Amino acid sequence: MKTNYFILILSLTLLLYSCAQEKEELTIKDPRFHLKTVDLDNENLAFFWKDDNGNKVNTFTNLEKHLKLKDQKLNYAMNGGMYLKDHSPQGLYIENGRIIKALDTVQKAFGNFYLQPNGVFGIQKNGKAIIQSSTAIQIEDLKYATQSGPMLVIDGKIHDAFNEGSKNVHIRNAVGILPDGKLLFALSKEKINFYDLATFFKKQDCKNALYLDGYVSRVYDLDNNIKQMDGNFGVLIAVYK
Image 1 (tube, rainbow, N blue to C red):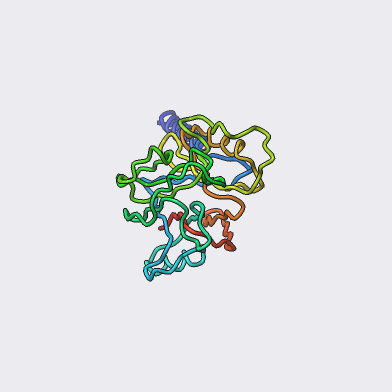
Image 2: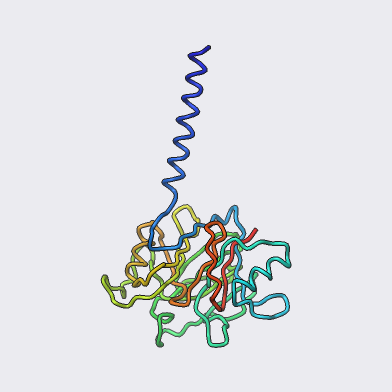
Protein backbone atom coordinates (compact mmCIF):
# COMPACT_ATOMS: atom_id res chain seq x y z
CA MET A 1 0.00 0.00 0.00
CA LYS A 2 2.77 2.42 0.94
CA THR A 3 4.52 1.75 -2.37
CA ASN A 4 1.34 2.39 -4.37
CA TYR A 5 0.69 5.58 -2.39
CA PHE A 6 4.23 6.81 -3.07
CA ILE A 7 3.85 6.07 -6.80
CA LEU A 8 0.53 7.97 -6.87
CA ILE A 9 2.04 11.03 -5.15
CA LEU A 10 5.05 10.94 -7.47
CA SER A 11 2.83 10.68 -10.55
CA LEU A 12 0.71 13.64 -9.43
CA THR A 13 3.82 15.70 -8.72
CA LEU A 14 5.24 14.98 -12.16
CA LEU A 15 1.90 15.81 -13.77
CA LEU A 16 1.68 19.16 -11.99
CA TYR A 17 5.28 19.94 -12.90
CA SER A 18 4.59 19.07 -16.53
CA CYS A 19 1.52 21.31 -16.61
CA ALA A 20 3.48 24.17 -15.04
CA GLN A 21 6.26 23.75 -17.59
CA GLU A 22 3.74 23.70 -20.43
CA LYS A 23 2.09 26.88 -19.14
CA GLU A 24 5.47 28.56 -18.85
CA GLU A 25 6.39 27.55 -22.39
CA LEU A 26 3.13 29.03 -23.70
CA THR A 27 3.75 32.38 -21.99
CA ILE A 28 5.18 34.87 -24.46
CA LYS A 29 7.69 37.19 -22.84
CA ASP A 30 9.71 40.07 -24.23
CA PRO A 31 10.83 42.98 -22.00
CA ARG A 32 10.46 45.42 -24.90
CA PHE A 33 6.67 45.10 -24.95
CA HIS A 34 3.46 45.18 -22.98
CA LEU A 35 1.96 41.88 -24.21
CA LYS A 36 -1.48 40.33 -24.07
CA THR A 37 -2.82 37.10 -25.53
CA VAL A 38 -6.57 36.78 -25.97
CA ASP A 39 -8.46 33.53 -26.37
CA LEU A 40 -11.64 34.38 -28.27
CA ASP A 41 -13.20 31.06 -27.27
CA ASN A 42 -13.15 32.09 -23.61
CA GLU A 43 -12.93 35.90 -23.55
CA ASN A 44 -15.23 38.69 -24.71
CA LEU A 45 -13.65 41.08 -27.21
CA ALA A 46 -15.33 43.95 -29.02
CA PHE A 47 -14.53 47.20 -30.83
CA PHE A 48 -15.91 50.53 -29.58
CA TRP A 49 -16.17 53.97 -31.16
CA LYS A 50 -19.41 55.58 -29.92
CA ASP A 51 -21.61 54.86 -26.92
CA ASP A 52 -25.37 54.19 -26.98
CA ASN A 53 -26.09 57.94 -27.06
CA GLY A 54 -23.88 58.52 -30.10
CA ASN A 55 -21.04 60.10 -28.12
CA LYS A 56 -17.49 59.12 -28.99
CA VAL A 57 -15.94 56.87 -26.36
CA ASN A 58 -12.36 57.95 -27.17
CA THR A 59 -10.73 57.28 -23.76
CA PHE A 60 -10.20 54.32 -21.46
CA THR A 61 -12.03 56.25 -18.72
CA ASN A 62 -15.12 56.62 -20.90
CA LEU A 63 -14.84 52.98 -21.96
CA GLU A 64 -14.83 51.88 -18.30
CA LYS A 65 -17.99 53.93 -17.68
CA HIS A 66 -19.68 52.69 -20.85
CA LEU A 67 -19.14 49.05 -19.92
CA LYS A 68 -20.12 49.61 -16.28
CA LEU A 69 -23.54 50.83 -17.44
CA LYS A 70 -23.95 47.39 -19.02
CA ASP A 71 -22.81 45.61 -15.84
CA GLN A 72 -19.55 44.71 -17.55
CA LYS A 73 -15.99 45.25 -16.41
CA LEU A 74 -13.08 46.35 -18.58
CA ASN A 75 -10.15 43.97 -18.38
CA TYR A 76 -7.95 45.05 -21.28
CA ALA A 77 -7.99 47.77 -23.93
CA MET A 78 -5.80 49.19 -26.65
CA ASN A 79 -6.31 51.87 -29.28
CA GLY A 80 -7.44 50.08 -32.37
CA GLY A 81 -5.99 51.85 -35.36
CA MET A 82 -5.43 55.25 -36.89
CA TYR A 83 -8.05 57.98 -36.79
CA LEU A 84 -8.79 61.31 -38.43
CA LYS A 85 -8.77 64.77 -36.81
CA ASP A 86 -12.38 64.32 -35.65
CA HIS A 87 -11.40 60.97 -34.04
CA SER A 88 -13.38 59.00 -36.59
CA PRO A 89 -11.76 55.77 -37.83
CA GLN A 90 -9.44 56.00 -40.79
CA GLY A 91 -10.55 53.39 -43.28
CA LEU A 92 -12.86 50.44 -42.74
CA TYR A 93 -14.71 50.22 -39.46
CA ILE A 94 -17.34 47.59 -38.69
CA GLU A 95 -19.10 47.33 -35.34
CA ASN A 96 -21.61 44.59 -34.52
CA GLY A 97 -21.86 43.71 -38.18
CA ARG A 98 -22.67 47.27 -39.28
CA ILE A 99 -20.31 48.99 -41.72
CA ILE A 100 -19.76 52.43 -40.21
CA LYS A 101 -16.91 53.48 -42.49
CA ALA A 102 -16.09 51.98 -45.87
CA LEU A 103 -12.84 50.30 -46.84
CA ASP A 104 -10.19 52.81 -47.93
CA THR A 105 -8.91 51.51 -51.28
CA VAL A 106 -6.49 54.38 -52.05
CA GLN A 107 -3.20 52.81 -53.11
CA LYS A 108 -0.86 55.78 -53.07
CA ALA A 109 -0.91 58.52 -50.43
CA PHE A 110 1.26 59.88 -47.64
CA GLY A 111 1.66 58.11 -44.30
CA ASN A 112 2.08 54.70 -42.74
CA PHE A 113 -1.57 53.83 -43.36
CA TYR A 114 -0.92 53.82 -47.10
CA LEU A 115 2.33 51.83 -47.05
CA GLN A 116 1.00 48.97 -49.17
CA PRO A 117 -0.16 46.46 -48.40
CA ASN A 118 -2.16 47.80 -45.52
CA GLY A 119 -4.65 45.53 -43.87
CA VAL A 120 -7.72 44.77 -41.80
CA PHE A 121 -7.95 43.21 -38.37
CA GLY A 122 -11.36 41.72 -37.83
CA ILE A 123 -13.50 39.30 -35.87
CA GLN A 124 -15.55 37.14 -38.17
CA LYS A 125 -19.19 36.28 -37.57
CA ASN A 126 -18.08 32.77 -36.62
CA GLY A 127 -16.04 34.25 -33.75
CA LYS A 128 -12.61 33.68 -35.32
CA ALA A 129 -10.02 36.42 -35.77
CA ILE A 130 -8.62 37.40 -39.14
CA ILE A 131 -5.83 39.70 -40.31
CA GLN A 132 -5.60 40.12 -44.05
CA SER A 133 -4.50 42.66 -46.63
CA SER A 134 -7.14 45.22 -47.55
CA THR A 135 -7.29 43.94 -51.12
CA ALA A 136 -8.07 40.37 -50.03
CA ILE A 137 -10.44 40.82 -47.09
CA GLN A 138 -14.08 39.70 -47.42
CA ILE A 139 -15.93 42.30 -45.38
CA GLU A 140 -19.33 40.56 -45.51
CA ASP A 141 -17.92 37.90 -43.16
CA LEU A 142 -16.95 40.40 -40.44
CA LYS A 143 -18.69 41.31 -37.18
CA TYR A 144 -15.94 43.74 -36.15
CA ALA A 145 -13.17 45.28 -38.23
CA THR A 146 -10.61 48.05 -38.23
CA GLN A 147 -8.32 48.99 -41.12
CA SER A 148 -4.76 50.13 -40.56
CA GLY A 149 -1.35 49.90 -42.08
CA PRO A 150 1.10 48.77 -42.90
CA MET A 151 0.84 45.01 -42.56
CA LEU A 152 3.83 43.81 -40.55
CA VAL A 153 3.83 40.13 -41.46
CA ILE A 154 2.14 38.87 -44.62
CA ASP A 155 1.68 35.12 -45.11
CA GLY A 156 4.62 34.47 -42.80
CA LYS A 157 6.96 37.03 -44.40
CA ILE A 158 8.08 40.41 -43.09
CA HIS A 159 6.83 43.35 -45.16
CA ASP A 160 9.50 43.90 -47.82
CA ALA A 161 9.51 47.69 -47.32
CA PHE A 162 11.05 47.35 -43.84
CA ASN A 163 14.78 47.69 -43.32
CA GLU A 164 16.82 46.17 -40.52
CA GLY A 165 18.43 48.89 -38.43
CA SER A 166 16.01 51.57 -39.63
CA LYS A 167 16.13 54.84 -37.68
CA ASN A 168 12.37 55.33 -38.16
CA VAL A 169 11.43 54.56 -34.56
CA HIS A 170 8.34 55.31 -32.47
CA ILE A 171 6.26 53.81 -29.71
CA ARG A 172 4.08 51.36 -31.66
CA ASN A 173 1.25 48.90 -31.08
CA ALA A 174 0.15 45.99 -33.21
CA VAL A 175 -1.79 42.74 -33.31
CA GLY A 176 -1.05 39.29 -34.69
CA ILE A 177 -2.72 35.89 -34.77
CA LEU A 178 -0.87 33.01 -33.15
CA PRO A 179 -0.84 29.50 -34.69
CA ASP A 180 -3.50 28.34 -32.20
CA GLY A 181 -5.85 31.17 -33.25
CA LYS A 182 -5.30 33.33 -30.17
CA LEU A 183 -4.67 37.03 -30.59
CA LEU A 184 -1.37 38.59 -29.61
CA PHE A 185 -1.41 42.32 -28.81
CA ALA A 186 1.84 44.21 -28.34
CA LEU A 187 2.66 47.78 -27.31
CA SER A 188 6.32 48.73 -27.32
CA LYS A 189 7.67 50.22 -24.10
CA GLU A 190 10.36 52.09 -26.00
CA LYS A 191 10.65 53.41 -29.53
CA ILE A 192 10.97 50.63 -32.11
CA ASN A 193 11.23 50.40 -35.91
CA PHE A 194 8.88 48.44 -38.14
CA TYR A 195 11.43 45.73 -38.92
CA ASP A 196 12.01 44.83 -35.28
CA LEU A 197 8.29 44.94 -34.51
CA ALA A 198 7.53 42.66 -37.45
CA THR A 199 10.37 40.32 -36.47
CA PHE A 200 8.86 39.91 -33.01
CA PHE A 201 5.55 38.71 -34.47
CA LYS A 202 7.26 36.48 -37.00
CA LYS A 203 9.22 34.79 -34.19
CA GLN A 204 5.91 33.97 -32.51
CA ASP A 205 4.88 32.19 -35.74
CA CYS A 206 2.17 34.74 -36.52
CA LYS A 207 1.30 34.21 -40.18
CA ASN A 208 -0.16 37.72 -40.35
CA ALA A 209 0.28 40.78 -38.15
CA LEU A 210 -0.93 44.36 -38.48
CA TYR A 211 0.45 47.67 -37.22
CA LEU A 212 -2.26 49.64 -35.42
CA ASP A 213 -0.83 53.03 -34.43
CA GLY A 214 2.21 54.95 -33.29
CA TYR A 215 3.45 57.32 -30.61
CA VAL A 216 -0.07 58.02 -29.25
CA SER A 217 -0.57 54.36 -28.39
CA ARG A 218 -1.61 53.34 -24.88
CA VAL A 219 -2.77 50.20 -23.08
CA TYR A 220 -5.14 49.31 -20.24
CA ASP A 221 -4.26 45.96 -18.66
CA LEU A 222 -6.07 45.26 -15.40
CA ASP A 223 -4.39 41.87 -14.85
CA ASN A 224 -0.96 43.51 -14.84
CA ASN A 225 -2.06 46.72 -13.09
CA ILE A 226 -1.22 48.89 -16.10
CA LYS A 227 -3.58 51.80 -16.77
CA GLN A 228 -2.23 54.39 -19.20
CA MET A 229 -5.22 56.72 -18.98
CA ASP A 230 -3.93 59.79 -20.84
CA GLY A 231 -4.81 58.72 -24.39
CA ASN A 232 -7.62 60.13 -26.56
CA PHE A 233 -8.30 57.88 -29.54
CA GLY A 234 -10.63 56.75 -32.28
CA VAL A 235 -11.54 53.06 -32.20
CA LEU A 236 -10.85 51.12 -29.00
CA ILE A 237 -10.38 47.35 -28.84
CA ALA A 238 -11.51 45.93 -25.49
CA VAL A 239 -11.64 42.67 -23.58
CA TYR A 240 -14.31 42.69 -20.89
CA LYS A 241 -16.08 40.48 -18.36
